[in-house]
Image 1: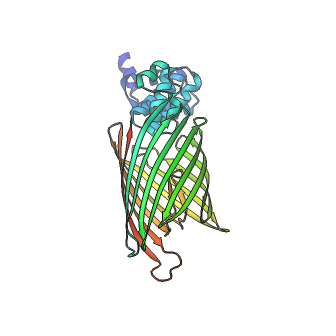
Image 2: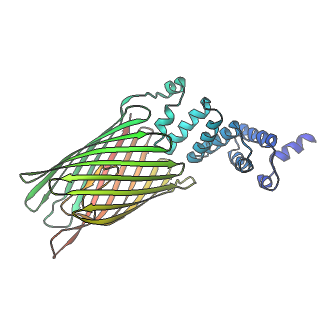
Image 3: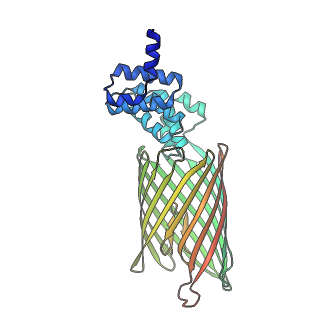
Length: 381
C-alpha cells in the first residue's frame, strides 16, 4: 500500500506546489526522480516553483538546464547552467553543457565557453585555441533594374573567418560589383576586415576597416571606412551601440546606430530586431529605421523578413560588411531570407529584396524599382 502512495505522490499535479511550500529534500528528491525518468516537462515545472521559493542547488540547476536542453529551449538551458556554474566553477558537466547550449542557440559566447572546457572535453570535440580557417562563405547577388539608363548590377563576395583565440576572431571579406550607368561602367572591388573581441559572456567589442576601390569610367574614387560597436547580451536580449565614419574622395559620412533584439521562448525561437541610425553628411542629418523578424520554420530551416525606411545613401549594415554607396540611393527596401542548414557544416542562404531607388537631381522619372536576388553558402570547417 505504501508503494502506491509514493507513486501517486510522484505523479500528483505540480500545480499543487504553488499552493504549498516545498522543502529542499522534497524538491531535490523529485527533481532527481524526474531527471532519471526523463520527464522533462515535470522537471521544468518543479524547478520553476522551487527556484521561485528560493530552493536551489548546483544539481537542481544542472537538471533543470538539461531538461530545457532536451526540450530544445537552449536559451533557458544556458541560463540554468550559468546558475549552476556559480556553485562550482570547475564542474565539467556544467561547462560542457553550457557550451552545447550556447552552440545550439547560435550565441556569440560559444567560443568564450569553449575556452572554459577541460582539455579532455576540448580534445574530444576537436576544439583548438587557434583555428586559421574556421569557416568560409560566398555570395552572389543580382540586382535587376527597371531604369533604362541603368544596367543590372552584379555583386560577388568571398569571406573567411579565423579564430585567433577563445575570445578573439577575425573575419575578412573580398567583394566586387559592377554596373553600367548611362554609358559609363562602375566597378568596385572591396576589402573588409572585422575583429570581434568577447570581453565577458555579456560584453562584446567589434571593430572593422572597410576599403572601397570605386572606378567610374577612367576615374578612381577611393573610400575608407572605420567601424566600432559595443554590444551586451543578456540571455534573450541583445543591445548594441555602433558608430562609423566613411571618408571618400567626394564626401565624409558619419553614422551612429542603436540596435535591440529579443528572442521569445518557444520552439519557433521567434525573434525581433529593431535598429535606428542617424546619418550625418554635409552639415545635414537623416534617420534610418529598420525592423527584422525571424523564426525557425523547421529544425533545419529558418526564415527572416525585414523592412527599412530612410535614405540609404552611404549607409552601412551587418558590421559594415555592406556599404550602400551606389549613385542612386535606396529610399525604401523590404525583403526576406531563408537559411537552410544542410547538416552541421553547410548553410545555404537565399534572399529576395525589393528596393525603391532615387535618381538624384532628376525631376522627371525620379524613382525606379530594383529587384535583388542573392544566394550564398557558408561552410563551417
